[in-house]
Image 1 (tube, one colour):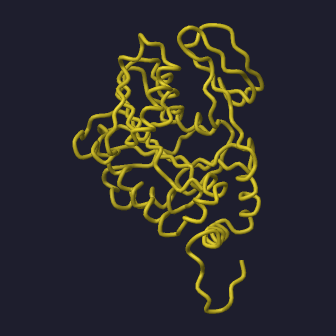
Image 2: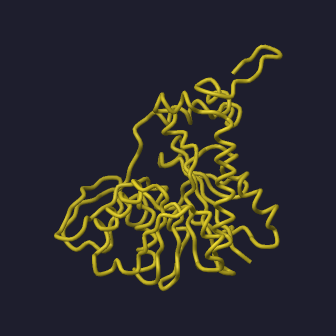
Image 3: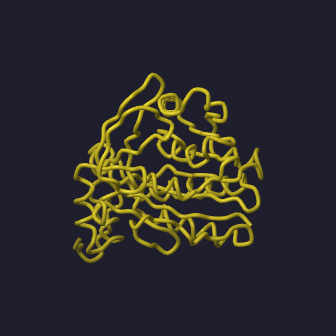
Length: 293
């Protein structure tokens, strides 16, 4: 984007959005932007607790398919429709059966279902969602996909995620923090939100994300792990949040390098980002894993 000499760069609205991300992504921005306006590719993830006949085909990763139908038996549904990148992110937390796990910003619940399956339904899974409406949606998802007799190990709460670090220190073995973010794909496709966009907002979100990540680290036991993710493409909300944590809490946390991307995604300085203009057309989604010393 060409600008007249001494003309201030736009920081708000559609022009500010375009300038900010074109500066960040350079020559790739047009293809990335175009991919955001195309139909979002969703996948059918099998529900391992479902018993009955079901239809799916064209496996993307284990248990996740490009095509399918959602079947129901008397209790639960056969498939949960979600972005394949979200499945990859949740699986990378890799919680063990019998562990105590926190999904700090859990709604709508697709990643929570993946965590519960990784735990083999054993342990204690705390699903937190501050928004009342989103929490009710989360509750419905659990009732639609988890057999009733297995739900006693799932605890749905509605607290500010920052409270966990203050009030429940050294409590959890694993934490998933899918943090509130700019969600540029949604912003670009909704004129109201595009008009409301500002550079200040992405900076404010980065501050919120840092605070929540610090809370997640505090609520972890020593040796525990947190998987940080956003659906943002802003480096302010991704690698720069991680860089700040690693700098300010170097004596408390370390970067976990060994992530399984299932052949998708691109390496960033600290994590991996999945982008819809690349292989598989999944994402956008960023992930990075940290371990508490």
